[in-house]
Length: 118
Image (cartoon, rainbow, N blue to C red; front, side, top):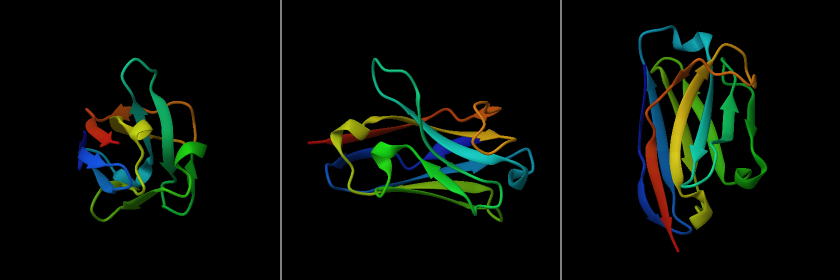
């Protein structure tokens, strides 16, 4: 089970940190990803992190602003979002998969809303 938290309403230029707490399986066996879905748009990839946390990857629009990290001792993955822009407004989902950067993710959270006002 994956449970996201930390979403909310923030002004442009502000910051939020999303958390995703995992339970039920061995967290360190899974690569983790963050995705987002804006109203009327398809879900899109945001960031991914390998099982040991050494490797990370970002979609171009968030590079330099977002940071994905994980704490395997706490079974939690984070997404630090800085310099937020209105176009970052979306429901953000975390996901767990067996293979880092694979197209398939096996488990998904329920999502947390992020709204950035201009």
